[in-house]
Amino acid sequence: MKMFLTSMAFVLAAGPALALSCLRPDVARTYNQASEAEQAYVVVSGALRFDETRLPENDGTNNDRRNVTIPARLEGTSLSRAGFTTPFARDITLEVRCFGPWCGGAQSGVEYLVFLEKHGRNLVMVADPCGSWAFPEPSAEQVRQVETCIGGLECVALK
Image (cartoon, rainbow, N blue to C red; front, side, top):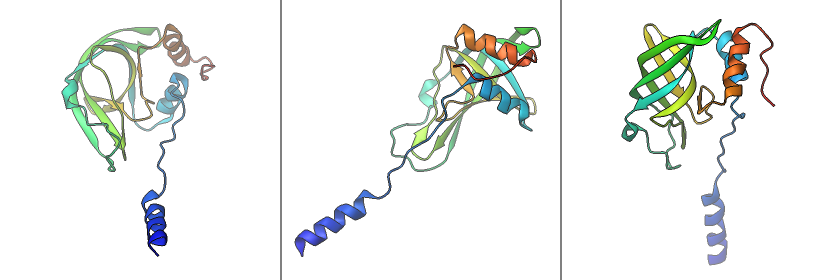
């Protein structure tokens, strides 16, 4: 009987395994999602600065869906039909999203290619666990790809 109870305790404690399933982040796919969304976006390449101590703990034990908002500053250039040519220096909101035990993140002082959500006059950088709206340290190829997308040429994922 003791063996049976011990076995049942292990079975009940195991529970379902949780996993986060994300597509590999891709700037063309994100560009296409942003252009098809009802939400308006501004695409910026620039350096992000914020207080990293305000980031949520990402220890894998949280089981809620919460967002943490952090004041931030983004300086660089925004995307126009001519490419990344328009100077950009604005205070923005960094919104770090958590999906259960997984939280997005960001690093201060790092260059990002980011799709900022427009909320009236406010701009929001979403950092979700899948990393689908902000690309740290973008390659020259990623930057060219977004410029190609806005230029009306074929906007397809990098290989």
